[in-house]
Length: 285
Image (spheres, rainbow, N blue to C red):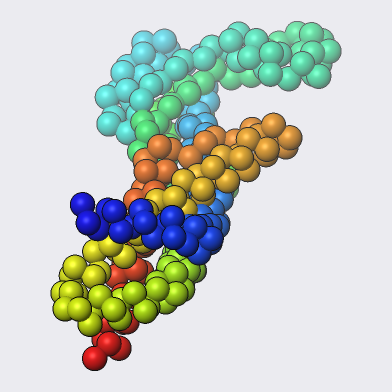
């Protein structure tokens, strides 16, 4: 209770200094929050594009429905496959007219349907990768009545290359932002504690133990970190709302990420305060 009272009293005694420390923590974590917002939306976009990855097996003319049904059941039994949909020639033409209305005149003038029947093979989540796509494509191509298998090989390779690049970039830049934020937070809180070095000196002279002296400052650092984290969440939310309303639609950061950011602010505050107090305690003989 003494530590809590002292920490709260420190906020009342020097509101400008503690507010500055909290504000610097908030700005540092705000930069991390903006990066998290960008990284999350990039990941969501890649996930949406990845959902469209599928294998299409185009069938030869005169393929037996019995053979097709057997192939559909066999392909559905593969763990990597979520579903197999048979699309007849008529359905293929109808889909083309619906998806390509600008070519309606071309489709209306043809006398014979040129589009082949096909099997559209959707993959399970977690198996939409190059290896699984190539494996399923090879199995589908093994049927005699399959004329050609397509999955946009070049497009798929670029998609997964982009995902790998995005993952590495997120780790590197995220770590750099976190390191900068840690330095800013540590500096801000050390300045706040340095302004109270005489208080630490007096407490040490009257025989207070190091742990007794350190606890209020560590708790004060945790409070400053928590306040800064809340400020960062507010600034990030404001930026999200502005961009979503004025520019383009965004997804908000997951709740788990926000909770982690607040926890990081509190931990950084505690660590920075503890290190700063320990330094001043060493200087007091």
